[in-house]
Image (cartoon, rainbow, N blue to C red; front, top):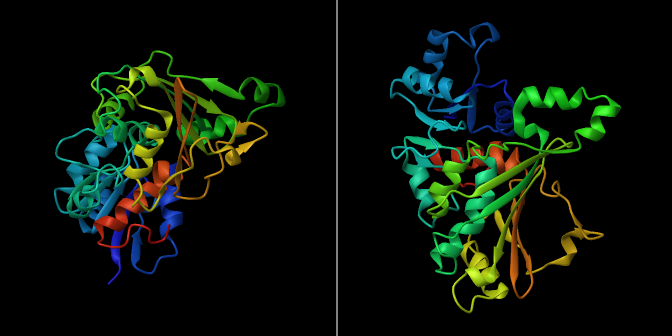
Length: 314
């Protein structure tokens, strides 16, 4: 029998992307709710309680409400930030540790990771685990994301820009109060003891993402070289399906010296690159913010929860 899956919040950007990835699969039966019933607690509760797994693509408060409506009857996969650091929810980043896929596979409640945190966690955690990067080292991350990362309201604003606005909105920094909602997640799972300084930017393109973490080699363990940093990352992800550590300083990914944020779009791949010199290192992750960053990641976690190969349908 196909697994019964309900996407609560099916008309949002993430929900639509997940539904598109699941729509042609014969091993999954997508339960849908009528437009008129989307905000009806009783109708939602019925679907939440009768699904094998419910995927929550909702604002945080609504995700908490959905958990209550499910009444413990259904396994939950939450794409909001509501439960990302909760101790009783499994963190849905299969590449976090060697045992994380089994943790997700056996969990009743899984919190899908945020898009930005994945790039930070996946580049920093292996270096701390290898003893190369002190856990108390002060870190920063600059990031660039397509405007779909802001959800439907931001998508509509960008797609309605005038020619004059389009130039002014080409790349814009935001979260300048340095209190972005992803910072607790970044700190919690990377192994750092200090919150990173996070500077995100939104670009005038639909999807695609780059995260960049700069390091001074003098701040790392004595004798650490750029080659050792790269080797630690390559070793950490050598057995993973979707994380690809590119050769050190690979120039082939550049276009006339520039790095595109969109080259991994429409895939579930996340590329890690290490650039630098004898004194500095720049760790870059590139991925689709709607793929590995959100909806693709949710499908990967759903596959694990259903006991399937994590790459099914991806």
